[in-house]
Amino acid sequence: MGKFIAALLPLGLFAALAVLLFSGLLRDPRAIPSTMIDKPTPAFSRPNLLNPSELVTQEALRGDVTLVNVWGTWCVSCRQEHAQLVRLAREGIRILGFNWRDERAQAIAYLRTRGDPYAVTAMVGDRDPLIVDWGVVGAPETFFIDREGTIRYKHTGPITPDIWKDRLRAVYTTLQSKSD
Image (cartoon, rainbow, N blue to C red; front, top):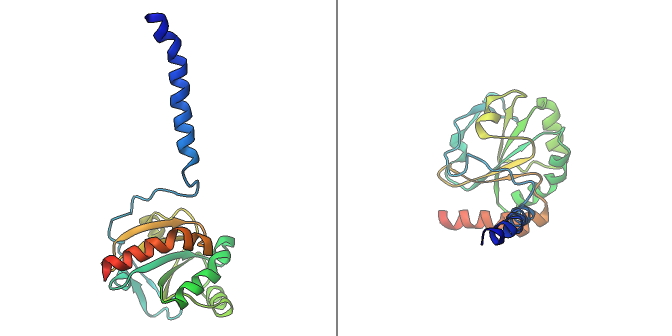
């Protein structure tokens, strides 16, 4: 009996390893877990990109389902997703921008040239603690915020038409239906 178990041990280890590796193939390699899911948005107060004498705060995230999009003109993937964000805004989806690590004039020129999908944009500096508070790893990142100001979902990477259609629209629609 002992020899039989000893003979099956390598097979069992192989099967366990195969299951572990196969489960890794089913995961989205860009999905980075966020500790912020189901937590209130962190408090913030940053200058409005278009009117720096006004402050953008977490209060701007209450009342409507809102996407918070971290972007920068220097970010190639942000440029790739920008047209999709403009389309979403035209469909009535509320987007708040965190413009990260840009000069104000450069960011404004970018939005004037390519369209401004943001209901409001907060200016966020290079080493701003807001980025750490939100758990941002890089740009672009988009957070889905419910009407009460709670983070419900985080998407890392550009929002393409296919990603919106296949995955993110359902998240947004669910948040909208829970809010109505």
